[in-house]
Image (cartoon, rainbow over the protein chains, first blue to last red):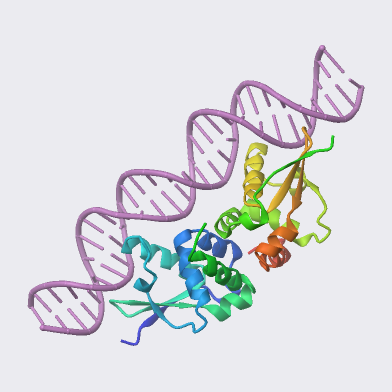
Length: 111
Length: 111
DNA sequence: GTCAAGGTACGACTGATTTCGTACCTGAGT
DNA sequence: ACTCAGGTACGAAATCAGTCGTACCTTGAC
């Protein structure tokens, strides 16, 4: 019931290479731009992103984001919560979330 | 003699996805961190980066960086110059170069 | 207990990316 | 003209990353 937090790397263990590789994928980046744009940093469900991919692939992408240290995944057993590690990311890579947030603006009307 | 500037995308045509994909590779990122850390923005030769890869592969990587809009390549025929498009990158993705520059510090003593 | 929804594990397929071998081009110097 | 160093073009090999099918687990509702 309480939901266990699946662990990612510590703040000072975040590596730019891993983060950039995580953000290189369109689907993962769309998740991150949404998270970065939501200043309330509320926990979100995995399905709230409407990704056009199977759930197995979603599992894969969220894991990559977590292992990159960008998000926390809270496991409720039959459901999962996603939360941006805003403070950690911002302290280690200041300005990165701003770039993603900016992308969210024109991300709704691409090209 | 005058060296023709191989063209990359215009400033407002720069796309975050392409840029991040370009920066996802270790070798390309090492080039970019060096360029970002050098505030003189002087033109550099391709060999001044000491990349541990063949010259064909270097050609490939520099092309990716140029097509992402991160660098200019100046073709002298039998030699090539590399220059960071600092103003363009900074205006389109403010803060990105700072992230790369920060990486250059501990990039010399990895792990 | 049974069932359905949400999620994961594992394996396979596929397409993209990195890498380099071979061959060729260009300009500077001799 | 020849040579050499730096670069490119093309293609092949190898590796990596995204995707999904099948099977299984977990929790909550009935």
